Structures are given as structure tokens and as C-alpha cells.
Length: 270
Image (tube, rainbow, N blue to C red; front, side, top):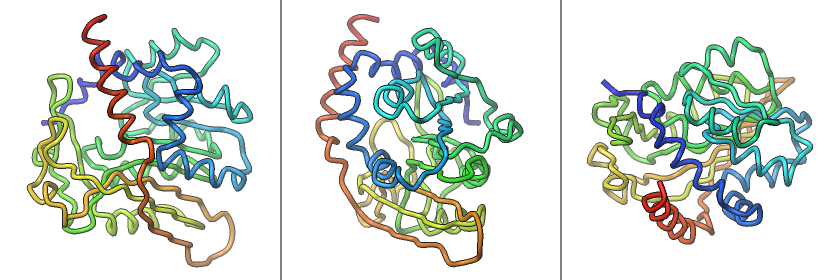
């Protein structure tokens, strides 16, 4: 059985809090070079509302970024990790950070209907990622922005005993979704006006304590870190605009260096 206890480890908050030591300018450089952030910035003028909900907010650094650079948005962060939420509240008492249930039932029941729902690196850690994705897409009334893990070839292996990651001494799901299956789930979940997909191809198998199906080790499987911009169709009935592209994160190599430095600092000072 896969465990959610990993997210209740104090180390989870420590790990995600490494960016609390970044200057605002460095935080901005890191965030805005990731493809999902680029999608947000490139299409921000299309977003009419100003309520911004983050699912999987960890220790609240996206709140710090938005408060400084895009303060027109009203932020609310949700996470299943009690240590992470406590850390976010300690750092930013003026912000709004809430615990949520793993299935998002309490968030959905709250009828928030924000303009933006943000969920970076959350879906692929769910034991049933397609069901979770459908529920996630129901929350926003305008735009949902995600980063997930995808594969071009081969069907999704939904068994978390075969697709998992060793994290904080626990096995957690790590599901690599077939991209065509994912787009089909999205288009069935809500009416779509625009669906933008940006893939950064990277070998997912064999890195960061992952236990994945062997195809995910092969380059021709086309595994990727994939950013999605999903804009809901409010009125009418027309085919969605779907654009799939490939683009590197320009900050990827420097970010690996900074991650290494952050890891060394945590080991020395925690």
C-alpha cells in the first residue's frame, strides 16, 4: 500500500522551505523560467477573475511571489501536509493557508470557484490520478494550470505498486500518464475553450528514488515534465483549441545546481 504519511513528516516542510531563503528576485527567476509559470504569464491578460487557489501549496512560497509581483490576485493555499501548512502560517500570518482532504472533497464543497487553480507536481502523486484530475478541474471557473508527468508511448500504468517513489522513508505514488489518455480525461471532465500543453522531455525512470515501469527508462517512450494550461469554455459549444508543443525550462540546469546547494545547507544546518 502507498502511504500519505510521507507528507506529514517534518522533513517535508524543511525540504519545500528551502526557497524561503531566496531573495525575491531569485525566487522570481526560478519560478518564471518554468513552463507552467510561462503559460500563466503569457495568458494572464485572458483571466478575468482575481481569486487564485493553489492545491499543494507546501510552505507558501508561491504566495510570497504573487504578493510581491501580482498582488492583484487574492491567494488561498491548500495542502494535505499539516507541517507544511503550519510552516506557511508561521511565515506568512497574513496569508490564507488551509489543510484539505486528499480527495479534495472539502475544497470542492466550499464552492470557491476561483479564476485560477494552480497544482504543480500534485496529480502524479495520487493513487488514482485521472479521478483526481477530473475533481481538480471542477474547482476553477476559468483556468487550471498544472505540471504533471507524461509519456507519449504506452498506456498509463495506474498500479502504484509499479509506479512509485521512495520519499521520506515511505513509498508514494508516482504515476506517469499517457498524454493522449490525459487529454481525453480533461476534455471529458469540463467544457474546454483552450488547452495548451508544453512538454519538457526528460528520462523519468531511474532518478530520485523512483520505481517505474521499465519503458519509462527508454528515451523513445517520450517521458516528460508537462505543463498544462486548461481554460474552461463558459458559453457555447465549439471544439477546443488544443496546442501541444515542446520547450525547455531555461533555468533547469541552474536550478539543479541550486537544489544541490540547498540540500547541502539543509544537511549542515538542520
